[in-house]
Structure formats: structure tokens, C-alpha cells
Amino acid sequence: MTLIDSPVPTSQGITLRHDWGVEEVRTLLEHPLIDLLWQAQHVHRQVNPEYKVQLATLLSVKTGGCEEDCAYCSQSIHNTSDVTGQPELDVHSVLERARVARNAGADRFCMGWAWREIRDGNQFEAMLEMVSGVRELGLEACVTAGMLSQEQALRLAQAGLTAYNHNLDTSPENYGEIISTRTYQERLETLNRVRSVGIDICCGGIIGMGESIADRASLLQVLANLDPHPESVPINALVAVEGTPMEHLESIDPLEMVRMVATARILMPHSRVRLSAGREQLGREAQILCLQAGADSIFYGDTLLTTTNPEVAADRELLSQAGVQVNWELENP
Ligand code: SAM
Ligand code: DTB
Ligand code: SF4
Image 1 (cartoon, helix red, strand yellow):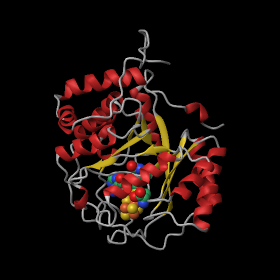
Image 2 (tube, rainbow, N blue to C red; image 1 turned 90 degrees about the horizontal axis):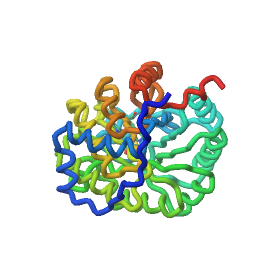
Image 3 (cartoon, rainbow, N blue to C red; image 1 turned 30 degrees about the vertical axis):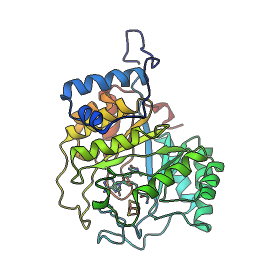
């Protein structure tokens, strides 16, 4: 069933820009909500006339023990939340989980390693096998594992990797408040390496870490001025994990997430805007506004990496209530 009775608009009239000024972005972010939603929906409906939503499932392959000091993260050795001693998953069990995710309707499988950077050796060889195995299942494959070398990026591309996730997390101005062990510039260099071997970039950030509206505008400006735009832009709301310096931060107002998603859609019309961590704090109505204003992907599955996500049954109901299109035909093949 399609939602559209009138002729389907096309995306031909949409211009891509990479020269956004921070004040322009801020003006969009702070626009009267009703107007911002209208503008975002105008773009979204042209680029995604059937409101298709991609379901991506996450799996933590190597959990905890990470040397970086990201203040939001449950997996950093600098935070008491860090769970050590969890065994790294092997190729067989990862591919089994990917098969289950595919059979439940996911079409992208994202694998995470709590590493500062990829090192050569058995674990990297296993990662390459996981990537090619996920691709053989007919799924898109995404990896997030910290920094990488040019050679490692090339080998991941040869294994068929669809996308590499490496977030900027926040604005360049606010970054020092969140992480001290890796620079913003290093993140940008990692993204360049990924891009140079033809792997798609998945790059976004987190709101709700105590940043200002100017910081949010600045993060979106950096993302929107990457040329080409990242193919995928995850927008996360902080999941305040006990044992991290951010454990006491209050949840964001759900409409802040709607504003981020809507602005990202206007700035990066053809990118996949992923409604990522923090959906449990959003409620049904805010999630539906996000789907209307520009989100065209969610993480699907009862867990993210180390924290919980809405249950699969609840998400199915949400998507069906919203009337958006998903690939349920993959169920029970
Ligand atoms: N170690 C790799 C790295 O940082 O590139 C990959 C894993 S890391 C968990 C992936 C992303 O998840 C982070 O960059 C961050 O944006 C997001 N994330 C992690 N913990 C989060 C939390 N508690 N709340 C919201 N987003 C979070
Ligand atoms: C992204 O931006 N969000 C996902 C994915 N990329 C790897 C991860 C969210 C993690 C949330 C906290 C956790 O579960 O540990
Ligand atoms: Fe967590 Fe990734 Fe930062 Fe490590 S690099 S602490 S896994 S977000």
C-alpha cells in the first residue's frame, strides 16, 4: 500500500550544498517547529516518496575495555561502567546473529568493536570474514571499530563492506569536553581514508550531552559541508549510562530530536538519517514526527551495543501505525 494518491514528487528540484554557514544551520534548528517540519517534509517526501524506513540491526562483537575516554560510553576503561571479560564473538556466531536479523526483516547489519583503532592480526582477519559473510547473506554490512589505516580500509572494501561508522559526536568547539584521547582532526582523517577506498561513510553525533544549540548547529554544519555528504547520518540521543560521567544528565526534550532530524534532512537531502540511540526516551508521537520529518532508518532489535532499544514487537507496531514501508516480506523465508 502506498500513502501517496497524488502524483509522486521527484527529487529533481533539490540542490545539494556544501557551504552551509553555522548561523544558517542554527536558524533552521531554531525555526518555529511547524515551519521546520514543513520544510523538512517537503524535502523528505521528494527524496523518499514512500517513506521507506531501513531497518538496521546492531551487534557488539567486542564489548568493553576500550582505551578511549569518551564520556558517554559504557565501554571505556576510564568509566566504572566498563564491563571487562566479555568474550569476543566468533565468525560463526556473528553470522548466525546476522541471519536471525535478516529473517526478522533487517536489511543492514552493523557490527561494533570497542577499540581505539583496528590492529592487524587474527581479530582483523575475523572481521573481514564477518563482513563478507554478512554480504553473502544479502545484507548491507557496516562496521564501527575506531580508527583504521589506509591498507585496512582497502581490505575492508575488498571484503565488500558497505559502510564504516565513525561519528564526530559533537561540535569541534565542544569536543574537548567529551573526549581527550582522540582529536577531531583524527576523526576527519579516518573518514577520509574510508571515503578514499569507496566505502560509504556513516557519521553523525549525539545530543543531550550538555551541549548548546550552537554546538548542535556546528556539528550539523561540519557534517553537511563534507563533500560528498555522509551516506548515513546517525542522530543519537544520549543514553545516560550509570558509571559514566554523564550518568546524571537529564533526558532531552523529544522535540529536540525532531528538530535535529528535520534539520539534517534539509541539509543532507539524500543521506539516510538514522534515528539511533535514545529512542526509548522518545515516545511514539515524537518518533513518528521524526519519521515524517526525515528519519528513514531505525536500529531494530532489542539491544543496541550495550544498552536496550525498543522491543521488536513494539517497533513493528509503531511502523505499522505510522504507515511507513518496510521489507516485512523477508520474514520467515
Ligand atoms: N569504538 C568505535 C568508535 O567510537 O568509533 C565504535 C563504537 S561507538 C560505541 C559508536 C558510537 O555510538 C559513538 O561514536 C557514539 O556516537 C555512539 N554512542 C556510544 N555510546 C552512546 C550512548 N551512551 N548514548 C548515545 N550514543 C552513544
Ligand atoms: C551510532 O551512531 N549509534 C549506534 C551505532 N552508531 C554504532 C550505537 C549506539 C550505542 C548506544 C549505547 C550502547 O548501546 O552502548
Ligand atoms: Fe566507546 Fe568507541 Fe569511545 Fe571506545 S572509542 S570509548 S567504544 S565510543
